Length: 87
Image (cartoon, rainbow, N blue to C red; front, side, top):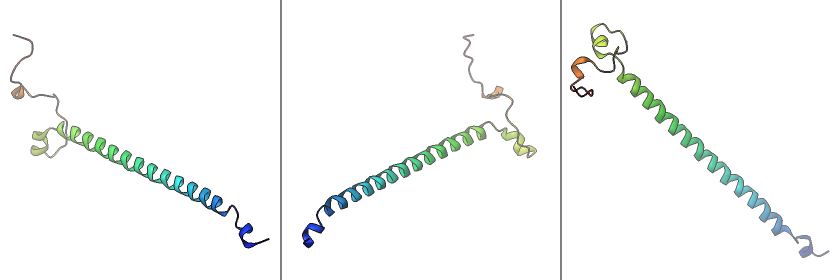
C-alpha cells in the first residue's frame, strides 16, 4: 500500500470529531447561559420579596423599642386621605 491510500478517509473522521466537539461546546455555552439567566431571575425575585417584606415593617415600633414587628394595618388612619365608598 502506498502512503496515500493509508490516509484515505482521515478528513472525514476529523470532520466528524470536530463537529461533535463543536456541538458539545455550543451545548455547554447554551446551558451556561440558561444557568446565569436563572440565577439572575432568582436574585431579582429574592430582592423584590425582601423589599416587599421591609415595606411591611412597623417603623415606629422599630425606632421606639427596637422590636421588629409588622404593621397591623396596611394603611394607618392618617395615611387615608380619601374614601372610595362615595360618601
